[in-house]
Length: 80
Image 1 (cartoon, rainbow, N blue to C red):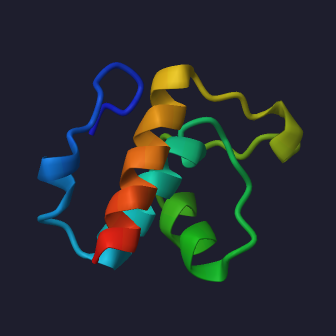
Image 2 (cartoon, helix red, strand yellow):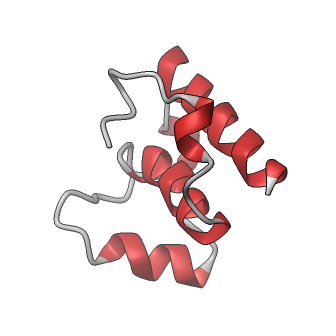
């Protein structure tokens, strides 16, 4: 998914289960190097060649589109 340049559609998100939606939402943060405290997310993203952890999470900055996509994914997670 290209979360940085395309808006997600709410109707399209309904086909995914909660665990996948959680990974999708956190992939947006991971693409900026967000350092995860959750062991499962940390393990998931540390295996990705594109993931480079940031020095600290305060340096992670999301675009407005990425923030909107996170909000849409969160809404889909709550809807299930």
